[in-house]
Length: 166
Image (cartoon, rainbow, N blue to C red; front, side, top):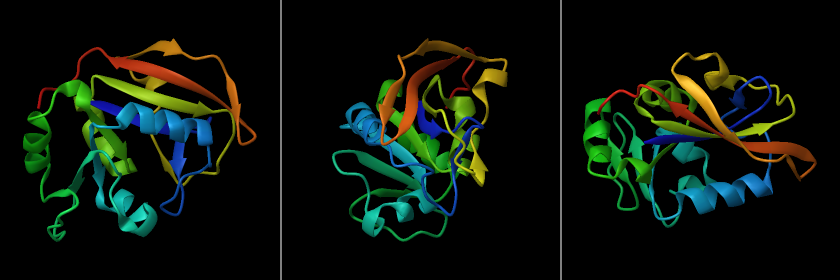
């Protein structure tokens, strides 16, 4: 399982249940990376999408205690149910896409994280763990900087040297 996230220079990821930046190059990267895969999220992340609809061309698994069954995605009630659901998929085919609580809960199970770093302060209200300060996480690749919608971004990959089993 992998985490995929955009962070500002303070590792901020959002405010008011929305993204900090509009980054066309990152959105393209996200679509290409997760297309045809399984994405895992919390209910607030699902509800933040246009119309509260799941992402197209992906299996959407949502941890939503008390959430109603839906035909367009897989709703699970507990973390154990979630881990059982994603266990059926190849590790490389599962991406945690938010929000903050899902990242915090599932990051120890992730073997890698794809982090888009934005060289700006988005005045975030919620944050991702700073992987540069986590002992089990190592930065393994960084792309050349690129401009998108007025922001400089870099695509980074981190590896977790000791992910938990699920």
